[in-house]
Amino acid sequence: MPRSDREPTVFSPWLFALLTFVSATLALYLSFRFELDSPGAAALTVMVVARPDVRDLLPMSVWRSVGTFAGTLAALLLIALFAQSPWLFVIGFAAWMGACVFVSVYLPDVRHFGIALAGFTPALIAAPALQNMSQVFEIAMDRMAVVIVGVLSTALVFVLFAPAARLVAPVSAPSAHWNSASNSPALMYKAWRYALATAIAVLLGCGFWFLTKWTDGSTMLIIFGATTALFVQADDPGASALNSTKGTLAAVVAGFVCLLGVWPAVDGFPLFALGLAPFIIGGALLKARPTWIGAATAYLVYLTALISPGNPTIYDLPAYLNKAYAFVIGVTLAAAVLAVLRPPDLTHD
Image (cartoon, rainbow, N blue to C red):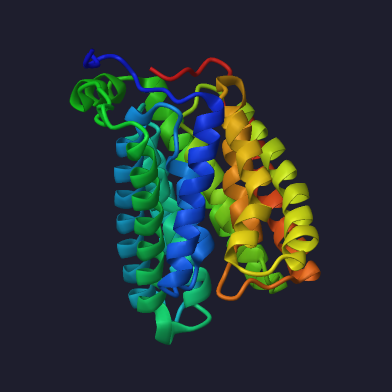
């Protein structure tokens, strides 16, 4: 019997977890094969876009790509204008980030994710580019390439197991929501409040990074920006960010075991992927459960970012701990900012 237009294709938790692992493994393999500089970012893309309901896959994938593309263009523009003036670059980035947060507050569906991603993508590109301006274009193109590899790997694996699925999820008319939202003083106040707070926090974070010359200060700033931008649209941003903090702490522990306890004992890509399996499958099992989706998504995304499989993968305990501190500080700071700024009587329209 053919599926109806409204019948969802939802994978069981175990099948979803296995498909997520296979997608991440495929993305890593292709990234290594194509000799991309950041293979881990391809696997990270899988963790972001994979959803138990296959109808959510295409919208998430499209807006992941759109957000990365828009953020990449913004990064190239900011670097081109302010390459010789780091503080002007920071001011431009803070303004861009604040603007993206402002817009994202108004969007109730997956478009919010794309706008949020566009907001903090310049930091992903600028952090290494400011150290090596001659390779800024290569860094930007590599970022786009790994996202495309991750998106296509996820789509290929999930669609193979859902040939009758309708991948276009129903979306409410955006104009109607935008008009009703824009007429809400409470939501307007919320948008300005979070936008200004995010911009100020970015400026302070960059100041701390520049003054202390902390190696992973840029990483802390990226995690703060990502967490803030992704959760401002939630009904309770502080609680959502707190769940992300819990997932981040779990990722730090799992990453320590994986990077320094498992991978050094294996040789070759098959064993490398097999060593990664329990960490991804376990997190994906939790992500398939609605009550755990926030913490589990943070765990999967930040675990992949922490271990950051590369060409080659480097096993360095001090570097790992420094990065872990940056992740925990960044996500905790975001949770604190969101919790303090959220007025108790504000709810999303």
